[in-house]
Length: 137
Length: 108
Image (cartoon, rainbow over all chains, first blue to last red; front, side):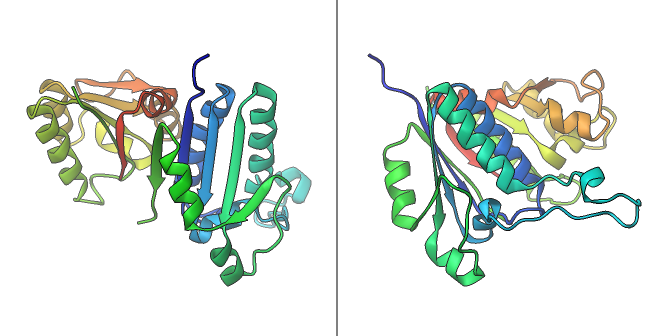
């Protein structure tokens, strides 16, 4: 039986700030659709991606209420990716840097996300077929 | 043969250090490696045909696979048929293919 492909991604950008978040999510989407085992280490501002209290907002400039605006929330993307991985037989292990969470008061996260440390990233990278670090500038 | 994937996300007209990535891709290819440069996000802007930047065409002519993310092109209203010579549009799946194959990958 062949070993399943395992990829690790390190993310550093806070949500709602950079196109890098969208690109990262697109790659994770492809990998989870293929049934790969995927590790995510969310560092610094990226711990906000799975923050459970993200809320939609209205757009007063365009006269749209919150439902009409349908603002995308990264916490929902994370949940969708976790669900997709489960459906395709893969595994998505999403780890937030604990110190980064504490610094930001980002302590509540969507189910399926766990708290860890840079040591987890080292373990992930050591046991993966490949690792991609998407750093902030 | 060693394989390298360099991902360029920055606009070359705004970030001149993108030239260093092109230089590195060229140097790796000249050393005998198989090199892919994948343009994503604002990195695709320099691939517009007619843009005043010949580095990408020269790199593609030297044997480096220069690819531009289809989604990033579409977001910016850029047609895949109007790219610099040698640059091809590609889905982001290509990045995951390379990662899964163990290609040495660097994001810029």
